[in-house]
Image (cartoon, rainbow, N blue to C red; front, side, top):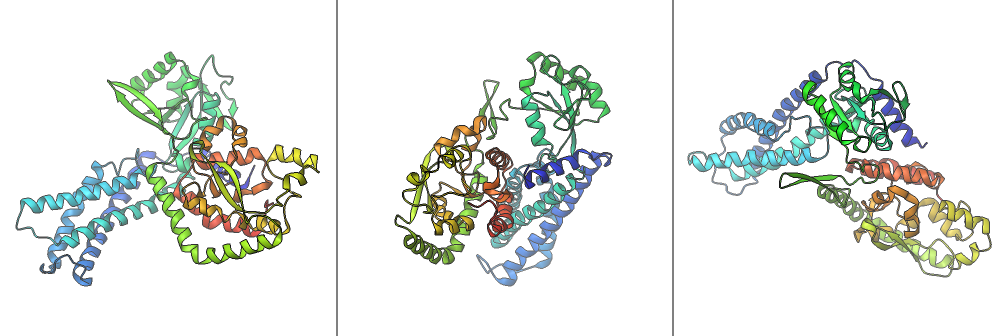
Length: 501
């Protein structure tokens, strides 16, 4: 198991052993209280900064409005409770939305926009109410940015607290089949999921486990007929059902149990395809019939935009260093051995589309003929896709591979939109089937110049471990993961050179 995987499991185990952290509802009330107080304080700062930019700095659309600090202070004091009410209407204090994906920040933007529209609508119906237009713009932009930043900080604090048993919902998973186990392995990291897996509930007739058995370190609490008792004993708040583990009649039985006896317990159904697809589901209603569809891509439009923005910004900032570095390496490669400067490798991109990934050439042009002289190495290459002592590599190529400089031309692929700075390992068409059932997931995200497998051991990892790390990245993607890999893990990995060959 890799170091990163051990950390994930360690955090999961720590979260799973926490008990008696107090009333979950009290914890949530405290968190909401901090959010309300913090939002109010941040809004006051935003309104004050907007006044400073408009009347002190002098950034104005029109200068004919006389500043009156007292009027703007009173306006701010009136607006804050109004805006907090709008925040509540947009679900910004609802724990079904909080601490989840990035949609919380979209709701912040929508809420402050509606809050500002309320000010403008009031001004339209009250001609005596005159407000500086520049103040409105600055207040809108600053409030959206500062509230989002504050909530980001609160979210990181809450994620840290979750590892110690706070802000988590005690949860059982109904079923112990392959899908249920995959769900448990993913959800047991409570920092991201917010769920504390208390155990499994076996489904009679389809499960190979019974009361007291351990499944991946999680206990089977009983059978489905004992669900009501299990929910009471373990103070369960959420029931996650692995739909492939149950018959429709059993699903109805669980639903009736929760409706009749445990109205406060939330029931969640898996897609039944979790271990195969990671792209997420969309639910639409057609003539009162709910229908689900799979998204083709793993990342949402906002996530894709943020990822591209990070990629292009870093590349453009690095251009003054990259251009002369490219020129020097190209000259050295050309002088080292006959052949082209660049090597093109046919690889798979998003949706299975092929493209040529660029690298500085690190092998002799007659590399295949050289490898034919080493049958055992040829077999090893077919088995692991890597050779530790590859006779085809040139002297300069060995240095470029050890320092990962050979991969710099892939920045061109990033600029072309074919790759990203961070992502799963790019693979050739022939490698696709080696991913088995996971191959559907791999092509939902752009391959990366660096990624989790590169910073966790690179070529020292087995092929199975690389696949596991790629899948972990895809399932748990966030822009913060990219930033962590780029700035805190890639540079040390390249400097040490472990697994680079």
